[in-house]
Length: 90
Image (cartoon, rainbow, N blue to C red; front, side, top):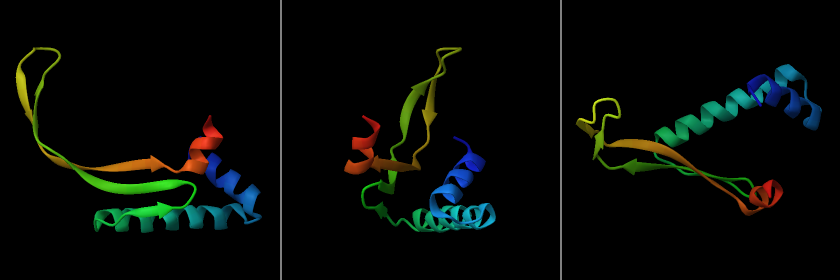
């Protein structure tokens, strides 16, 4: 499902216009991005939670040459599905 298909599904399920559903989705993405950038955790009961964690620096290997390379530390976004979402996907 791409963004436009998600907007269409949100509009159908909520009774909002497609323009309102797109604004709502864009608002959620902006708010979630800002919260994660600030280091906050986002919990949506039944759906899941988003958080930021640190990935340590490590050694890797270039698959083409086999040469060892250094991979820098970085922050990554993690998502953990909630019980309700996990139950519907089974």
